[in-house]
Length: 347
Image (cartoon, rainbow, N blue to C red; front, side):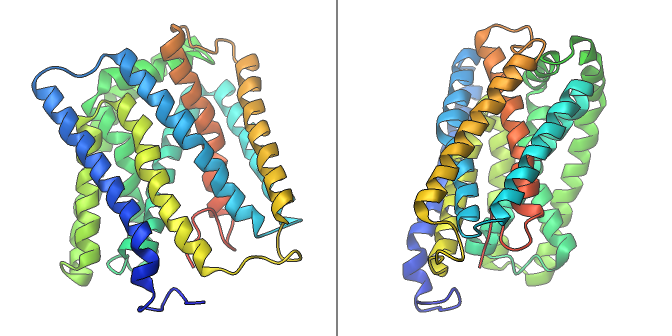
């Protein structure tokens, strides 16, 4: 089997994955251009339509991919690793739920930070596998790259779409404690200018330091181009649509390409090395049912599951909180604590 360093085989093996990365750029570019035109003619779709787009993108398209990331990771590891993995995951879920009940605004901040970490670090690993990271030497430079790739998901909409951002943030806080909304208002007063300034400084540093290492290399140009696209996308596309489509059309599509490269580079695990395929699928189904149980328990335990809003905005807010609860250990347990492989494994 050809290795990842086999330069003669790589172009043929990577063509499909590179097409997926190109598709992610084209899709976000088309959405950015479309909504830019809609803004110019004052014809942005109503919020109700935006919320439906969000739910379709996040529930129907993105949620299954998260389970698949765990499936491909744990299947090769077997037991007892799988048991420890699940126990840690459930422990982090329980801790996050507890935090939301005790300090919902802090919990909401953690939810936003999770989106930043997932988008940024996930994208960094795609760059490792497909577009190159030679301009990112050392842990600091890689961390800075992950920050500027992930922060636009939350920081740019907070600045470009403050009313919608605050509206849904308030609904999410009211799910647990209506009295805590005042803390969110305070954060929205000082947060956007501070975070926006820090992001701008981080972007400039990232771009200049990358150019200093390799000059205008292909990897650096791709990085800068994709970063500019992400910044424009989250500035122009309404936040509800932007978040709802970013994860399936950018994150999941690109991670599928990275996963295909990783799987192709590895031999199939033997029965002693990993889980047999039927057992792995059984674990996958159990995980899906457990995920649904988390949503059901959250709905039953939350004082106000819809946050005082009507059905559609309440459903968007509730699902955002739910998916953040399962996404935090997705990153921490599935990647950061898994030094052997991780959900974003690159050979």
